[in-house]
Image 1 (cartoon, rainbow, N blue to C red):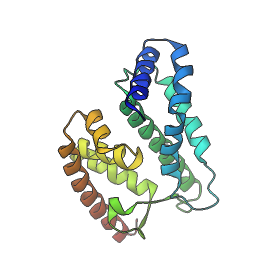
Image 2 (tube, one colour):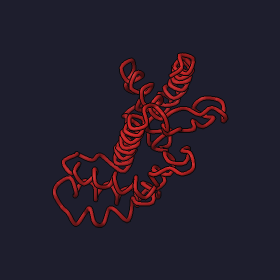
Image 3 (cartoon, rainbow, N blue to C red):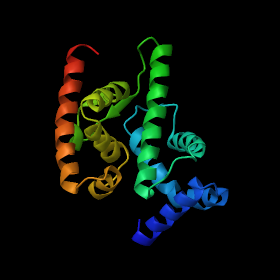
Image 4 (cartoon, rainbow, N blue to C red):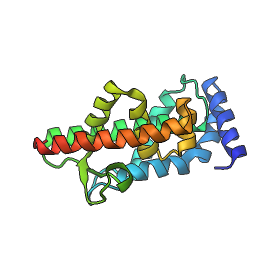
Length: 194
């Protein structure tokens, strides 16, 4: 997204958080494609025959974002970070409810790309990934946020640094360490039959 378009999104976000409903109507067409990109990133690793589609995930996130109108939006990157977090929560809640209903069967799988785990063949349960990210957040909240922003939100290193208010070098370092930590935790979990 061009710098001026990004500034326009930021202005609309600020206006919306100040109560201007018309700003939301102008904002949605500008960010819809990015919300679909984030949702598609979440959904693409699932097995065929899934019941939650990209559009449904975007719509559910949109409904939750409307309720978040009191959020003090910083900029486009902050909006996308919050959107990615909402989508993650929606999918994890959905996966947990399916697993509960099927007594452990039919959990949604998410394929962690090569950049995250070092092997394109490894596939892990979305709930297990969420649990590992939650455990990482207890140890190091920022590293957990870097994974959420980069992997799930698709934000660049620059955008992630902006959201977290840290340097790009810090994001690179946190990304490397978080990938190693998550890989170890998920392999440990898989070894325990989880």
